[in-house]
Image 1 (cartoon, rainbow, N blue to C red):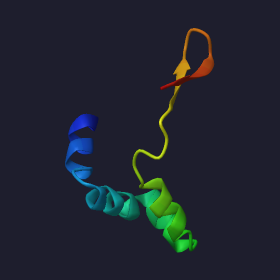
Image 2 (tube, rainbow, N blue to C red):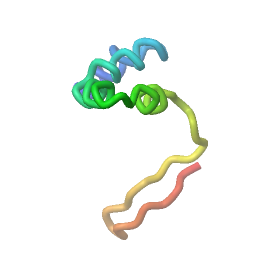
Image 3 (cartoon, one colour):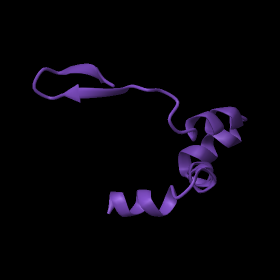
Image 4 (cartoon, rainbow, N blue to C red):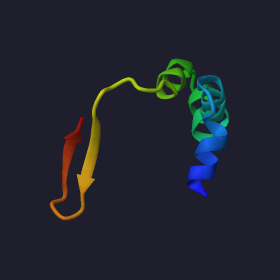
Length: 64
């Protein structure tokens, strides 16, 4: 279900941005005047690393 939602709401950057803007969290940020935060949060591929949490070690490591 989550994968289907992702595929239907992130077809392209514009669709993804609008999905973020219309979400409850996005609307809360917009009401607070934090439009730039919503725009930043909807940008893709900003970083070349991904943090990954391990349940076994309870540590976060970086995956390239």
